[in-house]
Length: 107
Image (tube, rainbow, N blue to C red; front, side, top):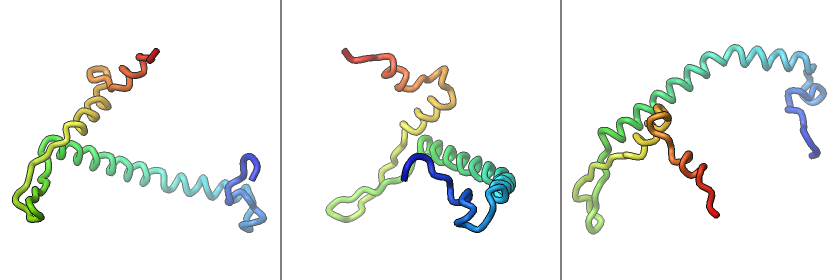
């Protein structure tokens, strides 16, 4: 392999179609699925956000064991998830640590 190689849908002789037809087919497929893919991505992102808030605010039960027997549960919370969400949603109020480390150069 040397350099850039064309994707298989461009290789007309190998897949039995002409290049122009393959390009049109690809554009047509992208137009059809662009909306549903964007909607699915939005729904997935909303579910992730809801789960992060639930874990940070409500927490989750983690089992406690003693000598191999479960003896109770422990309520755990994820503060880090909430911190990251604040840094992303309000970067002007909660700058991430990357800004601090980016300005510091060790000697």
